[in-house]
Length: 96
Image 1 (cartoon, helix red, strand yellow):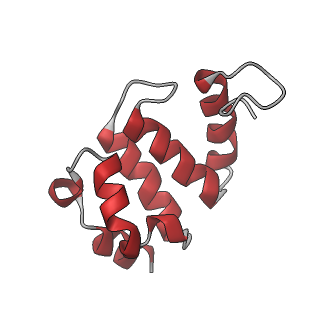
Image 2 (cartoon, one colour; image 1 turned 90 degrees about the horizontal axis):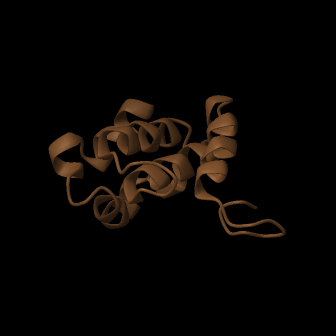
Image 3 (cartoon, rainbow, N blue to C red; image 1 turned 90 degrees about the vertical axis):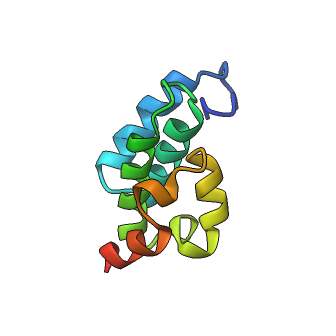
């Protein structure tokens, strides 16, 4: 809603606040979205380490967006640093 400005003014900071509430409660889609927001700097300073933390949480719950098949997209979101931090395969391996 806030992220896209649907029915309200678009506000990335407010969107992040709501996504974080759901992410901390274990919602995998929200965890992935929070990771994307950190990776791209939406509503927060860009932070690849924090993004990877949230992508990892989503992967541990089986979120297909954080699956190795999407590693090109994840690597792009993380500024080409995913191989330095952790491979997408290792994220999923740790999730099992």
